[in-house]
Length: 168
Image (cartoon, rainbow, N blue to C red; front, side, top):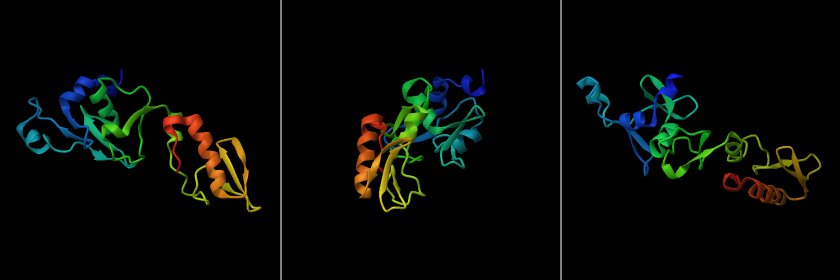
């Protein structure tokens, strides 16, 4: 059993308070810690932002991503897969913005790539002036208009990815 697995959702609730409306976790008063620790940390925002942009909280000397802690806090279980931020904002840990997702579902909820010349998700500009719509390796057609190609992508993505469909 790893250190991370040893931290139970009940241990999370002992260490952290969570406000589902704001998405903020704060440290709870810990009678087993010295007075100085509680004066400095209790009732204060927990964690720090890691290099990837996710907030991380240390519980019992183990760093855990805040959105995973929140999932355990709210449901009483650790997430089986990943926890997806529906609005793509890594700092927005309000409960209504979090959902459990497989890696594949999470990939469907990505924004359009920054290097996409058309600015439209699922659309590639061709050298002949036309636009190709595709989802991954699935070819959806060539179109004269970029918006038309994007609509073909959106129709396919909405049909196949449901709640994880993202238009842009």
